[in-house]
Length: 250
Image 1 (cartoon, helix red, strand yellow):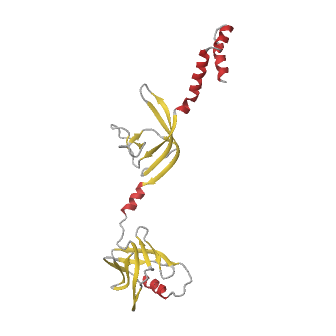
Image 2 (image 1 turned 90 degrees about the vertical axis):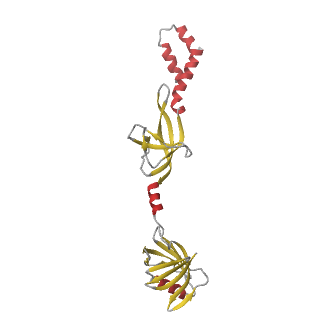
Image 3 (image 1 turned 45 degrees about the vertical axis):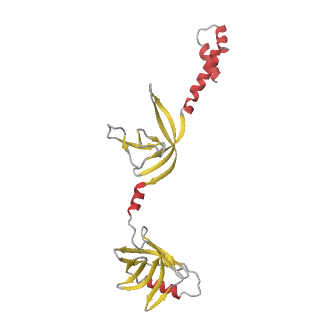
């Protein structure tokens, strides 16, 4: 196809038939074919796939500009963020999100000394909502956070638990509890403000066990709790001023 085009182009000029035939077989004709092939392949040659890192915050497009641009790095180890002054085709930026992108980079304009590039999204490798992550980091954990073994139950008489298989876990980020009674696991929610603490309805697994007396007593006593005190590694769960459960940190 390229050969037909070149032959037609040059034979349209007022050369003699002999000159036209000579041109077709000349070295010049071969060089022109190479040149046209290179021009046809230029878009492929000037496009490259790369990884870029996008900041969760925009930065000024230039020192003298109030306009904000996407901030990027080619490598996370690079010093400082650079402004990206153009759109990224196929990509919608959300403030507060940090991204890792795979993009196609293509030369879109060339000056005397510089070349301008454009990006087209290939895929989003990572999208992290840093605002949400920052909010989670600011959640202050309550003193009861973590896992505690039940050691004693105070319910008219004192029941001592020596095996350390019964425990409760307080998750103060989710305000949830879970753990293990003598046989079954349990789960639920709780509320706390200051030294007050109240468990909501407690759910549990339903395994068939030989003796559920201690388990039922633990579950019933947990429902009484309305405040707590911590002394060192010991947690005292109370109803009013009366301690009903004693635990130690796991």
